[in-house]
Length: 264
Image (tube, rainbow, N blue to C red; front, side):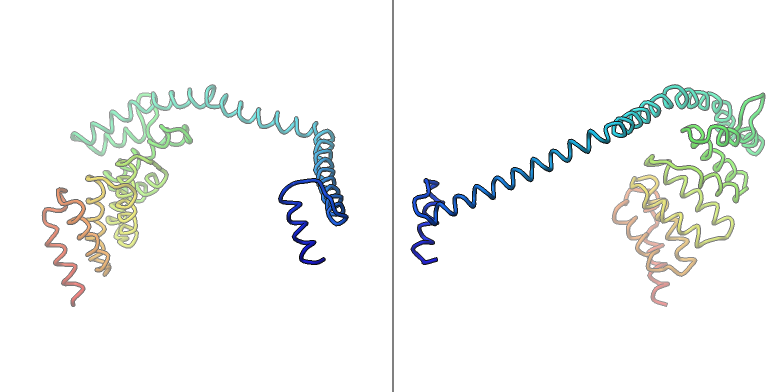
């Protein structure tokens, strides 16, 4: 094809006019054929989809019904089973919480913590609530109370077990539960484990109460297990980010200890 013909074709396509020359008519026929082919292909695809839907509509209907039943079942489970279970678990835990509070604030700690754990007067204690109401919020919280009770009773292995069964997104309770596991491991003289839980507790949530406390504990244990760089970083973080915290009061002393250990 000559340059002139190409130019004429371009002019024809650009203007959108009717084909005049033989070459333009051939191109027009070719374009119409291509368009018809695409439309036919789309129609064929749509027809195949419709045929597939018709052939499988029984199964599609079954899937839709199944999904609907799942949704309704979930909603029904929460309303009919889970909500009453949550309510009963909360009511059953009331007595144990009273024993726990008295133990924390008063005398006869071990005996009161024992009552909180095992229950009394036909009422469940935290251990039974954690077991019987497993999967409820109250059952989860019972694990926390049980772990803290065991920690106070110096039963550190059980403290670790129950605290590890507890989970929380709360800004304070979540870090405290992890930090309490660290405290238990310190008493068990498993300092590497204690250090790991203190670091986790410090990083879990950021607040003026738990973060500097567990940074400090991680730093102190870090000094004991030769993690001097980490310890120095934790102490400096307290000084820079939490200058008004209780842990910041004598933090320069610990920064000095960590720097001295690094320079030995």
